[in-house]
Image 1: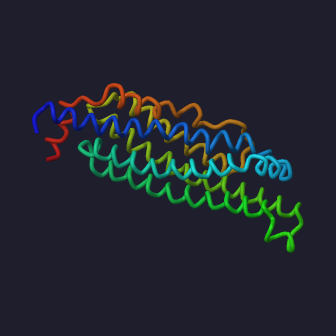
Image 2: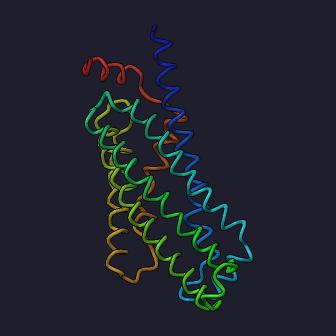
Image 3: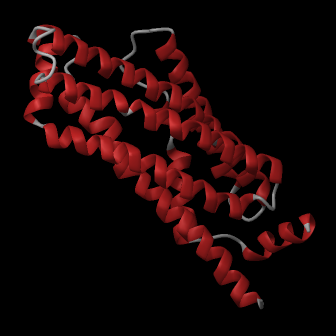
Length: 238
């Protein structure tokens, strides 16, 4: 493979990783932020139930997009592993492990949303529960889903640390993006701790520390990597 082919190949991998990473943003915003904010009324099971049943298709789409996020995440980390493993194979493997731990937790958490729909339909449950009880149970499953996502977010944070370290050490990507990714890891972990401690906070740290997750895929799509430095890393680990 000549230099031009090498440059095209590795930057092709970089751009695939960047494009896939960027697709996570609209999917995640819709499924994990917009729909819960639009349909869940804090502390009011009846109002929440009415909103969900009035917008059932949107609620179901939030399940689909949440599942798609995890599937796309697996392809993202595979592409990033190919890109970053010449820097440090162990850290690259750790990055993959964290994503593969978080994905099934997040996907299984979506089962709670199916339980919500089953309960609010009420057809098979009305002989055993009143509608008020069914709505209360549905709200309970929404809270369980919320905490399941919190647990998954621990791994969404943890994978950023080895990735940030690899970017920082790489020599073929900007160091400042690596620093921002490692800071992003702390944001997720602090948010998970706040949730576990049941602290009453209306904001999240990660909404201020996610910038590295935007800059990295944009850099990969627009600029790619320094191919000479990447090849140097490959030669060092050969």
